[in-house]
Length: 252
Image (cartoon, rainbow, N blue to C red; front, side):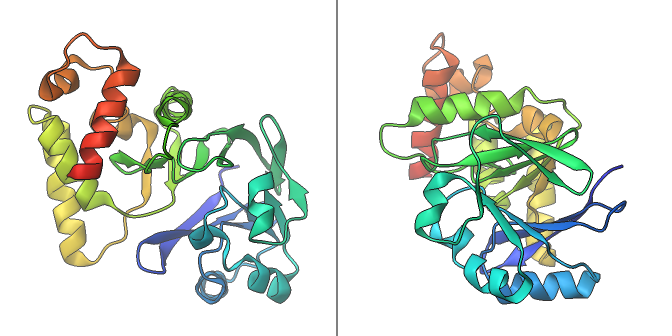
């Protein structure tokens, strides 16, 4: 049975995400940027949070966990690196499994943005934190471009229909960069128009699919000749094109 998913803005641009198994009523939050906002979202839905699934150790993803755990008694599942900033009940790493009711996720180690970053991969939903954004990817730690490319490469070959729950809404900035790097791509142009409309309407946009990203995300498309041509590095391996794209985004 598919999960019920509720994604909402928290802090300024973080994605709050609640997952509920309709069969059992079990409910998990993905990270806790702000405990009050996450609890308010759950209350508005009539859901009771019983689990926290933590993608990585950065403060804007873990700073609300202690308060939420105190309020709900939720069990916290997290990578080892998150223990420095939050109470953790179960440490998860590559290959470990965690279930929200009857829906099971496999844990993948996806370093690059953060050394301890993990993603939770389900049958039709993946929780990718700050590895993938709509038409973008997270900033990369110094010296870890290859690790980030490996992490992205794992995610981008999931089935096209897989829903990706990302960690932030940087969609308009990402869409503008994608249009600059992939100017002949009509799918990118259409998504830029949609991103501009979403921004104007105040709509929060942190949900996407693998198929949509394969069509429009320049980092997913690093193996496409058009991206290498824009950068003037035709013939270079996809990993090198990714590095050049990420460096270009840092300056964009």
